[in-house]
Image 1 (cartoon, rainbow, N blue to C red):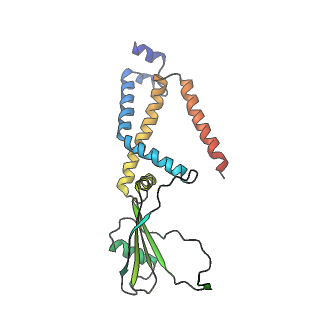
Image 2 (tube, rainbow, N blue to C red):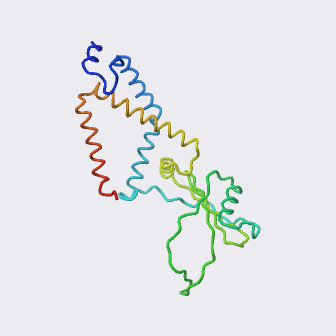
Image 3 (cartoon, rainbow, N blue to C red):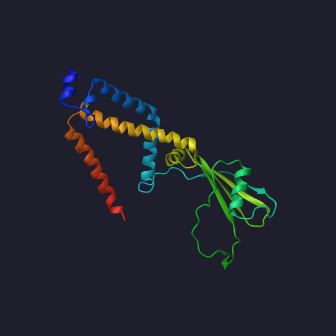
Amino acid sequence: MMWRRLNQSGLLFVPPRWQRARTIRWLKRIHAWTGFWGALLFLMLGVSGVLLNHRSIWKIETGEPQEVSAMNVAVAPGLIRDEKALGIWAKREFALLTEPRAPRKEEGGKKAFLGKPHVEAPKWSQQFTHSNGRVTVEYVPGSASVSVRQEAVNALGLIKNLHKGTGVGLAWVLFMDSIAGALIAMSLTGFLLWTKLHGSRLLAGGIMLTCLGLAVVAVEPYLL
């Protein structure tokens, strides 16, 4: 009976010689096991995706980094000659794994103190961003100390940073590649199984085109 049904309505884009009950079983297994492999990560990606999508529209608060420690570390004057040297020194001194970068510049005009304008001393800054926080180092050229500050994020901030791949290494990138591969496999097998197990091909195509159309309508006004 199953063989007869397979002959009457085969799977989309599957050669006729593969239209067997065994094909259906293998598609189900691939769909199920790839889903099981990435189930918890799919949940994490979904939650963090909502946080990222609505952080500005719905003002969902994921928690700004909070300072947990700070100090001034003594250094020999003249040891640090530029911002690049500051980053190299901090990475070695504190055994940090990520690469330094200049933090975002704060907007501002003329500096004033007690109502009088003053020239502020130049200051070099480097920041090391990790998935659970960041370390900022600042140095005034010629001084005998480096200001260091550690900030941490909450659990929601950690999940958001993991979604974006912020402050992670190659191992995490490759692991997330496997999760992306699982999503691709689930999409392809789900597409093939849908028309076989849950209704007509016309309905499946209509759902896919509707989804694509809504995506285009939503993003089109914001394209350049």
